[in-house]
Image (tube, rainbow, N blue to C red; front, side, top):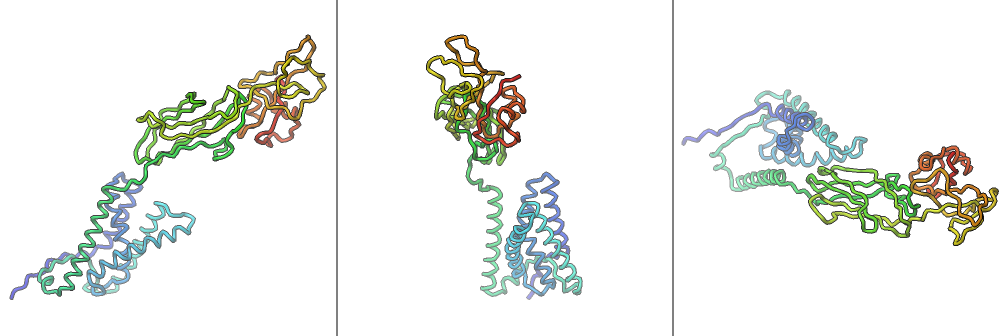
Length: 391
């Protein structure tokens, strides 16, 4: 009885091909702009190459393992090796990154390949393992029912895993879609927000947006006070995972307690706000403080005190949006000579002596002399400073 010869293809350069494909993947990640090729090579690089080269190093002989045993061990070792690489990288200064993972996996594949070539070289040529694709219909029919069932089950599992992998690549799960919208204080932290300012005093905050929408989105930001739009930032075009931050400066001119400052984030394709944030700020009225007087303006004109009187230590903060070189004295009933008025400034978070001096047109040294300061860098938020008249 004639028996048909099995169809087979033997490939002796399997390890060289795996190393070449691994290096090609590295090139597609950092040099060649071929994302499709990167995806096609990424699957075998993760699920097949590490285990195949390790099995080749452990079992270099052709008869060391059966074909199905070698394939199953290859897939199992590939799945087991990569988490161990991640655990190792997690305890190194480099950490788990794309570069470190790709380098570590490639080094592992190359190292196992070198060992496999060395061990194969010590065997006779006919005993070395080589990748062989064989189709033997007669042998399949002569095998037992259990062997054929296990072979079919393994083949179905491999094709199911491959199909699932290709499906995930074709239709990836994009996860939750959202946008991060935040306001930071002047020190770029979620703290030190202004709660009490003087009318006209500049306020500086950081407004940020991070796009997590898995698509390009254009945003605009509107700042409202009392429901009225007073400031707008437009043309914020962000790609997925892109971040935008901007310093936003403004002043509140109308005194009043508990003023609601609202920041609204809009998507350009929507009329309703997409995200909103707000701050509550007390705005103190503009006032001038005469030496020896309280910061509250008197109901009736009061004669000015003598020039030698000292300012009250509990004087209310006073500042204007655009301060003049010298404050105007309080009116009196008679043309009596008055001492020049002083302005009290409350230091806000982020302000420096230089910025305060530029605001009032006064030198740093003049402010230091008027307040007995020795170190211009030791200003504290909420500290009251007497602003002398500009020379």
